[in-house]
View 1 (cartoon, one colour):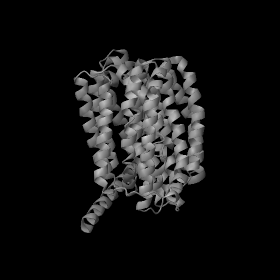
View 2 (cartoon, rainbow, N blue to C red):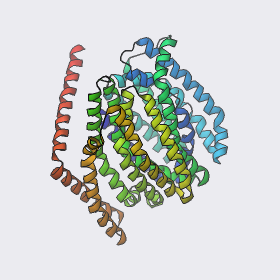
View 3 (tube, one colour):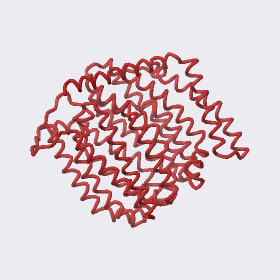
Length: 483
C-alpha cells in the first residue's frame, strides 16, 4: 500500500511537472534528454551488477555482506562515471547533436550518487519497510520538479530537464542514506562478493538484454528520424509505461521481497503469482484499453495540440501493454525461486524478437516502430508463460481464470466506449467533451461488468486490504513497543 501511494503520488507529481515543462519547452528539448538517456541507461544496467537483489533474496546476511556490496557498487559507480565522461562527446557526435555529449557529462555523476545508496535501498526493501522508500521518493520528485520548472521559467531550455533529473537523484540518495541508520565500514569479503555475484550475474545479463529492448527503438528513431520524432515517441512510450509502473512494478517489488522469504514453498509461490496477476490485470487492463481509445483527446487537452503526433504511439503501445500484463509478474516468481537463469533466457529470447521488429517498423515512422513492439509482444507472451508454468506450475486454465475478470470487463468497456468516442471525434467535438463522455462511460461499464459477473473478486480484494491494514497497524504498534 505504501508503494502504491508512492507510485500514485509520484506519478501525480511527475505528470504535473511534465505538463508545465511540456508547455514551456520544445519537443527537441525532450528528445535531447531521451538521446542522452540511451547511453546513461545502458551503463546504469551495470550500476549494481545484481548485488542489491542478492541482499534481498538471500536467507541470511550480515554487516560484512552489506559492506561488500556497498564498496563493490561504489567502485563500479566511479568506473561508470569515468567511462561516460570520456565517451559522451563521441556518442553526441554519433547522434548528430553535440549538446548530447555535454548533457551526458553532467548526468554521469548520477552513477556515483546512486551507487552510494544502493546497499541502503536493498536493505530497506529486504525489511519491506516501504514506508521509508515511498516518502523519500515522493519528496525527491517534488524537489526535482520544482528545480526543473524553475529553470524552465528562467529560459534554460533542455538544461531544466537535466536539473530536474540531478536534483531528484541527489535528494533521493541523501534522504535514503540518512533514513536507514546503516553506515558502511572499511571491509570487503571476496567470498561474500562471489556469493552475491553468483546470484546477480544472470540478473545483470537480463538487464542488458532488457536495456536493448527498451532503448533500441529510441536509438533508431533518434538516429534516423530525428530528435523531434524521438520527442513524440518518447512521450508516447512514457505514457504507455505509467500504468505498468504504477501497478506491475509495485507488485513485482513486493512479491520479490515477500516470496523470497518462502522460496521453498512452491505452492505459496504459485498462489501468490495467480492472485497478484488477477488483481494487477483487474486494475490495469481497463486503463490500457482506455488509453488506446482516448489517446488523442487526452494529449490535446493535457499537453497541447503540438503533441498530437504521439497519440497513435500511445494507442498501439497501450495494446501491447494489455498483453504484457498477463505475464508481468513472472520475473518476480522466477527470481524468488532462485531461477535467475530462466529470467535470463526470457530476456534473451525477447531481444531476438523485439529488436528486428523495431528495425522493420522504422520504415513506417514512429507508429511503425510501436507496431513492431506490439507484434513482438504477441509472439512473446506465450513463450513467457511457458517459463512461468515450468517453475510455478501454473496451468493455462488457472491463468485464464485469473485474468478473465479484467479481460471480459475491458472488452465490453471498449465495445461501449469506442463507438461513442468515434461519433464525437467525427463530429469535431472538443477534446474536453470527448473525454467527459468517454471516461465516465468506460468507468461505469467496466464497474458494472465486474460487479455483475465477477463480484466475488471485489469481495476477496476488500478482505485482503482489510487484513493488510490490520497487519500494518500491528507492525507499527510492535515497532513502537520495541522502541
